[in-house]
Length: 406
Image (cartoon, rainbow, N blue to C red; front, side, top):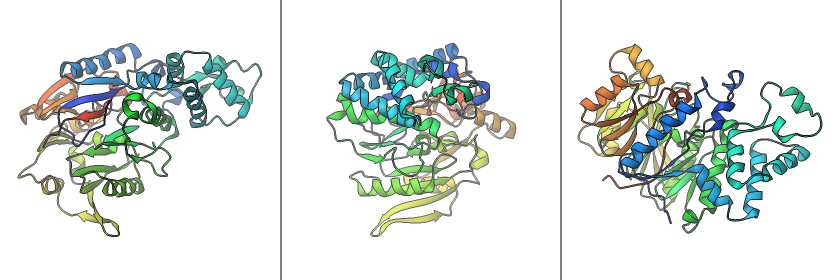
């Protein structure tokens, strides 16, 4: 049995969720990149090798790795009824509203083993595969990108669909239809998989909630403080809703810091501009230091109390984390060209695997050098293809269990 336990960003990582990139990346096309939230098409074979390096580094450091598709296979293999329920939800979340077409898609997916069926759901199902046996309007119109089930090309960024928060989870309502389907996979795993089913795992957010929130905007700074980004992908209403639920729960969280960041592709989540390296060390995109607005949210008798923090970011962190000093490392250093280049390739998106030990992309050599000078160990991994999806080591990993760091 596995009980979720994450109360910080830096404690020794014990169990993590990953997705190894697959054929879904090869189903990207140049004309549909924007729709599928990519800027380029990664070369799959090299992307897999790079991802395997990440996995090997984690294993070498004593981290247990769980793969989302394997967990889902184990979940759905328990009963035919559960598999059928999942197929109905797959059709629903892919917006296949025609009754005859949805039945044909389900009929096609039933022909596969559970493992292969999940692979098809993730990589995409085309009209040609389904072989409708008749000429449909959708078939005629979607000649350029003829997918009934679009590929889940972003699935290797496991941080966004689901987040372990204390003893509970958030199953996130993603901001785009193309990614909302990813949350469905872990919804089933947390609800029905034997390793989780024993525990009544609290859900502090659900994919049917009305407002958008993504895991890259959730950072657990300590057992008392959670940082939530208000960003291109997370709405302020979602931040308020999540904060309210946390304060009503049995969790020890006392404050939520809401970081308002500019809505930009380069700054899509809080963790693309700001991550924690050690108890008192952080890396940030320097161009945002004077731009980020921070609001504190605390419980009150009437619900929540929201205040604007007037101090600079360093002062806010010292105050809420009760630290005598805080060191902030600039992504890219002082050179504005390097800042933008290394920010674009996720220099601010590090994954801490124990206090003062982080995994980072090797391409961000200026930032990595500065982090080392601050006394933090940096384990570099290659990223020529993985970085094309605009996400770094933190984006690709979802901690399920971390040790306490306090």
